[in-house]
Amino acid sequence: MAKKLVIKVTAGADAPERCSQAFTVAAVAVASGVEVSLWLTGESAWFALRGRAAEFELPHAAPLPDLLDSLLAGGRVTLCTQCAARREITEKDVIEGVRIAGAQVFVQEALGDETQALVY
Image (cartoon, rainbow, N blue to C red; front, side, top):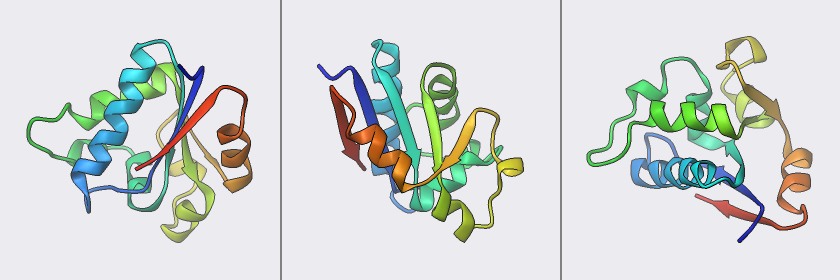
């Protein structure tokens, strides 16, 4: 099993099942003791803002705010620099614990030893 899991989620409310799957896999990995880095890109970028995860609904899925809280507590959550800029999201806007970083950091994380990368 990979020692680190890097997950890039591109979907948000526009593709709720894909979005929920990414957050669920990330949260389960954290609970299993895996080092997890979840990247919010595209429409998932909005979940870096306070209250946005609470607006997300998908029947029979774990509540997104709970999944996000577990990721913030036990993993790392990163908002894509370009995605943030396109949505006029700044560091002062994001939930505490969410960092903003770009492609170079993603590549470094994804290519690390014993790392598995997934894109949703």
